[in-house]
Length: 544
Image 1 (cartoon, rainbow, N blue to C red):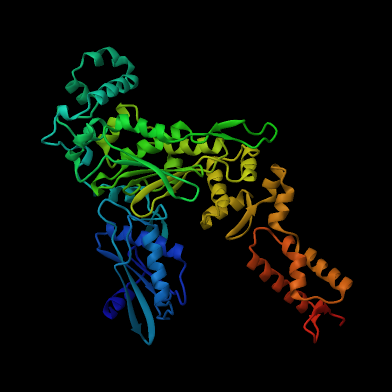
Image 2: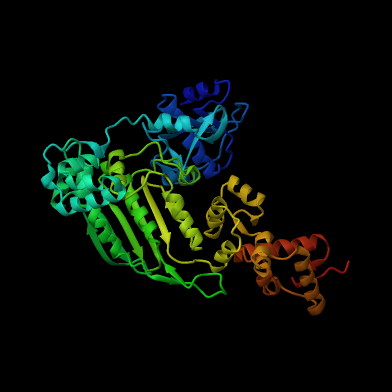
C-alpha cells in the first residue's frame, strides 16, 4: 500500500480517479458521498477497476496525516451504504504510516456495467479536479453498457395463448380500442393471436413475461419463476401495526383495479378558513394511485425476484415500492426534463402498458403527481431510492396548516421553489445550492439546519407574528430584559434568566440551543461590563 501511495503522489495533478484531502480530524459525510459517486463513475468510464480517495495529504502533496478514528470510518461506511444506488461501499480502507503520519487510502469500486452510482439520488462526475453532476453523455455511456436482453420481451418456450385469461384478453381489447379509436372496427375482427401481436404483448404468437404479467391466468405465474407478479397490499394502523393484507397476482391488468378498490380513499375535510380551501377532497387523487402503482409494475427489476408493496396507513399515507434502482438520474431531473426517458428497464412491458392505456410515454407522470399534491396544499411525494429500490410515499392530508396557507397565498411560486420549501417544512437536509436558491429568492432565513420562513413570506401570508416567533428579537431586546430584571430585583441566578427568556427566544431553537444562547448572552454582557457575578454566585449589575 505504501508503494501505491507513492505512485498516487507522483501524479502531477489530481485526475478523475484520484482525489487527495487533508481531512485532519473529520470529513463531511455528504461531500464524501459525492466524491464516492463521482470517482466510482469515472473509474467505470476510464475502464478502471477502482478509484482512490486519500486522506491526510495536502494540495501540494505533502503528508500531513489524519486523526480520523475507526469509529468515524464505520460511520462513513454506514452512510455510503445507506445513500448510494445501486447500494455499494468501499472495497477497502487502507492505512499507511508515511513519515510518521497516518494516511488513509479509500479504495472505491468502479460503477457496475450499465449502472451509474448515485449519491442521494444524484449522479456525480469529475472534470479534472472539479466535482459536479455527471454530464448526460457520460451518463448515457454507462447506461448503454447494459446490452442485456429485455427480460419482459423474451419468449417463454412452453407457454401459449391458452395460459392467458380470456377475461383479461377481453379487457385488453377494450383498453386497446380506447387508446386507438380509429381501429375499433378492425379490433373486433382480429383473432386473439393477431390482437396480442398488434398490442405488442406477444411476439409472433409466442407468449412473453409481459403477457403473463398483464394477462396470464393465476396458475401461469410459474412460467416467470423465480420472478413474480405478486403485489402485496398491507393496511397499518396509527401505531404501524398490521391490521389487514391481501396479495394480488396476474393477470395484473384486472387485479390492479381490485387492489385500487381495497384502498380506502376517504374524503378529507379542510379546516374552514374563509374561502381559502374547498370543503372536502379525496385523500388520494385517483390519478396518483394508478400512476404510482402502474409505474411499479412497468419499472420493477423482475430479475431480483422481489414483489411490489403497497402499504396503506390509517394515518393518511400510501407507500408504493418496487425492486430495482431508479434509472433516471434523479426525481428532480425527471421533473425538470418533463420528457420521456430514453432508456427503459422493461421496454417491451412498458410499450404494452402504453398500448393498454395503463401508462403514457410523454414523461410527465411524476411532475403531474407533484402538481396534484401542490394544488391540494398536501405534502409533496416523498421518494426513497436507497437499497436498490424505488419507494414513493403520498400523504393524504395537510400536515401543517400554516405551511398550506403560505402556498395558497403565494401562487407565483414555481414548482421547483415549492419542492425546496417542502423540504424545509419536513426538516429535510438542504444542499448548499438549495440553500443558495432559497436565500436568493428571500424565502427562508436562519442558519443551517434551523431555517424558518422569511419576512417576505410572512408579509405575503399575513404571518408577521409567526415570523417573529421563529426568527426571534434583536439581541439588544434580550439584554434590556436582563438589565431591567436586575434593576427590579437586584440579583438573579441563571435559572431566573431561563424563566425570563426561554419562551421569548426563537422557536426554531430547541431547548438545549436556547440554554446555550442564554449562556453566551450572559458571558457577552459580562465582557461588556454590563453585568457581573458576585461572591454569592449571583448575577448582578456591574457598578464599575
